[in-house]
Image 1: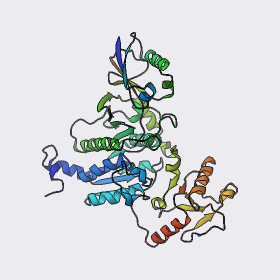
Image 2: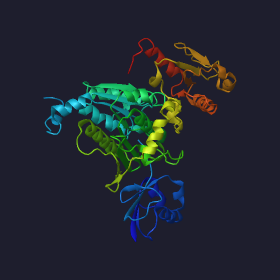
Image 3: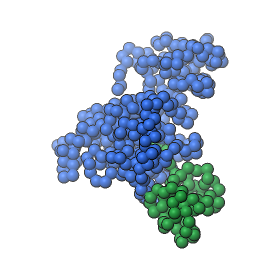
Image 4: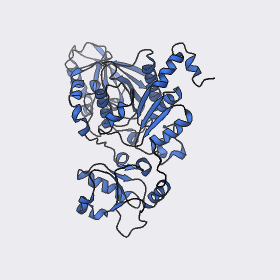
Length: 77
Length: 365
């Protein structure tokens, strides 16, 4: 299935893009993360949470959504 | 015509709503990029009691975004400089300036005095401290944070909603996320995010609209794009914070920025009780400081005379220009001697300051 992956803050700097479309098998969020880690090797050094269809999810969640977001924490003020 | 006429003629606010604003007590953590617009709008709106906590001093590079300050504020403590500006904007409200760092030791007592806490700090250590203190004191937290051209806003700990830890359970590794002073920030961005935080504060006070609780609002200034992500409460995480509340005060904040935490202006800390001044210059160096009691330990002999350092007091270390005093703080920190600060001013400036302020110490709180 075709999904859109959005990248925020420092994550977008690692991926060099703010979003992309990916064709993936029906899988889990953690499998998707493995795919992304292989594609962007610096990703594993970053802290972030994952949202599926605008809702934060854990790694063992099934990948069902059309939109995935990788959200890092910001500290600046 | 009343100062608040434009609020009062809104049927959603009215005199009743304006009275709620006047009775509200709001604490703003940090008077920096986010804190300035937050404070400006809350003051203009007439929030009756506003607290400002910031230990840092205004620098020229702050003026690009920290809109409460001007050239005349440079070198002054931010909480005190902000208070002076805001009191001119609205003299009918009461403003408490805390020119000191927020710590695990002072947070609970300060938070206790306010209804709403607004986080405009610039580091993860403070943000987690603020979040946990809000959980323990059961105060709603209006969160805002920025990175380059992006911002995040949320209301945490509101009516059994999630806390910041439900979103990001633990702080990232040190240095994993740089801050504004290392990487830069578009000046108007904290203006936008801070104004949105002020908006959430007023919604909380007035009970208007939908509070941004259980959601994280993300804004990208370059793309003009927004996303709102749903965040759910993790009761186990909140319970674990509550379980440790008795040992909260025993924790030490360890902010990982070199200049900002350890260097401090004398105007931010004096007059205050429990201070030990330590002169790390060689004994022959002039001028001597005579207006206050000073412990003299040259930097080269600091480790030999550790017994002269009073662990119960805040240590203010100075030298001729501020370089050796920084080294001394670093050295003491490595020896696990805490509560040490390097004074930004050299001995002669300290002398001038003490001569001006000694006779009439003003209580700024």
